[in-house]
Amino acid sequence: MKSAPHFTMRQLSAFVTAAELGNFTQVARRLNLTASAISNQIAELEGLLGFQLFERTTRKVALTPEGREFLPAALAIRRQLEAAANIASDIRNRAVASLPTSLGIARQSKCASSTPGLNGFPTGSPTARQTWRWALTELPRPT
Image (cartoon, rainbow, N blue to C red; front, side):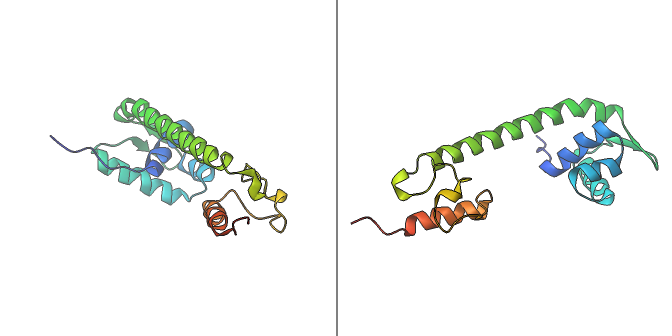
């Protein structure tokens, strides 16, 4: 049995967005990449899949019959990955919501203004969340 190709979410997103927009330059703008990066991601995906997804001209791209057939599966994978990301976010938010309020830290990490000296602290990033966890473990215990 042949193993499944190991394509990335970025490649899949580039493919789905290119199928929607029909132009690598527009895809690049939407995904904040260069058109050559999009072209490379699509070419890599095509190499992994073993078939061409798009017919290319200098101004636009159009799905090949194989690309049209693959698109519903790509959309389903993207929906599943987005659902997984949402579930992970919910789990993280529940963990933050369960922090004891006696620590003087708001239950939602985006409300750093409730803690003196932390106004403007960027709480939404992974680094900030890790910093919050470290700070919570390093707080002195009440006597």
